[in-house]
Length: 122
Image 1 (tube, rainbow, N blue to C red):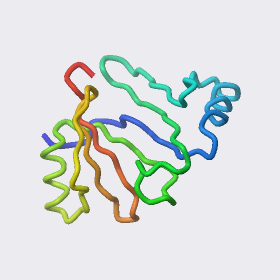
Image 2 (image 1 turned 90 degrees about the vertical axis):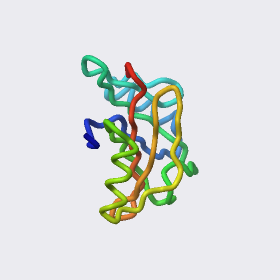
Image 3 (image 1 turned 30 degrees about the vertical axis):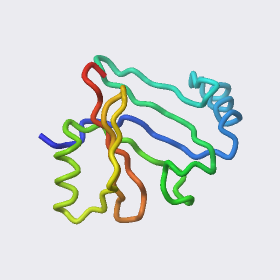
Image 4 (image 1 turned 90 degrees about the horizontal axis):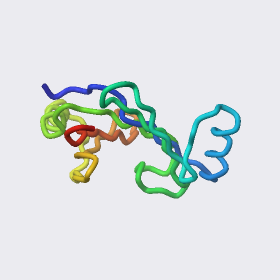
């Protein structure tokens, strides 16, 4: 159907990812890994990941972008095609991994948005 079906993740830039992960563990009880990530399971195959990235990561695009949202989509190719027809800036690269397919667009305020079509069973 070419639509968003949920939030796959929220990614934060951190000056000190290990220290921030420890803060989330200690103060909020979030079971973050030492690498600064946790995946919440909502039932069935639905998950949402919170992940911390180093301050100097280029994964988010512009250095001033502190947060990137990952939206779960049902058909990455069709979603990207629809975005292009609406004049949305779609980044030319896509990525296939064991987790599924990924693509990126940029919202009207310049924020990179990640789109994720999960692998079957995820």
